[in-house]
Image (cartoon, chains in turn brown, orange):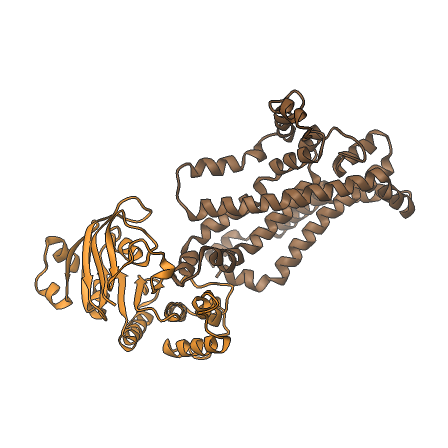
Length: 280
Length: 238
C-alpha cells in the first residue's frame, strides 16, 4: 500500500484538478455545442424545419449521406485488408505502408483536395482525356467521394492495426489447423475478435466523412443543390448572412456527432462483460 | 500414423532456422522435441503442422507426402502454448469448431456434434463446462479445452507447442498424466515441444534434442542419459 500512499494528493489539489477539467470541457466543448443548438432554434421550431426542408438544404443532406454511404464501406474494406496484411504477414516495406496509411492525417485537407483537381481537373493530367470521354470527376460526385475517401482513409485501419497486432496470429493458426478455410477463419474468428474496434473505427470514419470540409470544398465547385455537401451548405448560408438556416443545417451535423458518441457508449455498455473478459 | 522428415531446411522465417533435419517417428510414438530457445524445435513442429513451409526437404505422414499440404488437410490436431481459444465462443462452441467448419456433406448433424462435444469434455475431465467462456476457466482448464478442440476431428497426429509452458508445477503434472493417458487411449502419434528436459524425459518414448537447427541426438530417454552423443547434450542435461 506504500505506492497508494505515495499517490495520495491533498483534497484541495484533487478538487482543483477536477474543477479545471470540468471547466475546460464546458468552455471548449459544451458551450459551442449549446451555442449551435441555441442559434438553430432561436426563431422557433417552424423556422428550423423550414430551413432544413429547403430544396438546397435537402439536396445537401442527400449528397452528404450518399458520399458517406460510398466512402465509408470502401475505407472499411480497405482498412480491414490493410490491418490484416500488416498484423498477420511479414513483408518488405511494412513500416512504410503503416506510415503511408497515416499520410492523410498529416496532409492539410485543402492539399488533399487540390491533388485531385491536379489529376482530374480540366487543366489536370487526365483532364483532356476525361473531357473527351465526357466523364466528370471534379465538381461532381466522383470527386467528392475521392476526396472524402482520401481524407477518411486512415480511420478504420488505424483503429485495427494495433488491435490486430496485439492479438497476434495464434487464433487464426488455430482455426487453420482445425480445418477452417481462410474465408471461414476470417468470418468466424478474425472478425468477431476485432468487431468492437472495427465498429468504433467505422463510426469515426463516418463522422469525419459527413463532416469533412476542406478537401471536399476544393473539388466541389459549390453548386447549390448539386455539389454542396452539408458542411459546404452551412458555409454558403453563413456567407449569405442567413444565420438561422446555417445553424439549422449545422445543428444536424452536430446531432450526428452526438449520435455517434451515444452509439459508441451504448455498444460499450451493452458488451461491457465481454470487453472486460477480453482484458483478462 | 508414422511420420518421416527428410532433409528439411528452413532459413527465412519469424522462427529460428532448421538445417537439414531428418527424423522418423513410428506410429503410436510419443516424441519430445527438446532444446533451448532458438534451437528450431518450434519451427520443426510448425513445419509438421503446415504452418511453415520448408525450403528444402520432404515431410511424409505414412505413405503420403504432405510437404505442400495446407494445415487444414493434414489430419492433425495442434495445441498452442497460450491455448488460442476463441474468446467469443463458449467452451462447447470452441470444441465444435472443427466439426462446424466441415463441408456440408461431411459435417456431422447437430445432435452428433453435441454428443461428440460431451464425449470430448469427459475425455479431458471437464464434464458440464460446455456453456462457460474461456475467460471463466483456469489456465489448466483452458489447455484441456484446447486439447479437446484439437481432438474433435479425430486426428491421427497430435502436435503440441510447449503445452504446459504457461502453467504452474502442480497443474503441469496433472495435465502431463492426462495427456499421456489420452495419447495411449486414442492410439495417437504425438509430438510435443519443450525446453524442460525433465518433462521430456518423463513423458516421451523418445526425445529429439535440437541445437542450432540440427538434431544432436534422437533416442530413448534412458539411452540419452547413458550415452550423450555430444558435449551439447551432456551440458544441456546437467
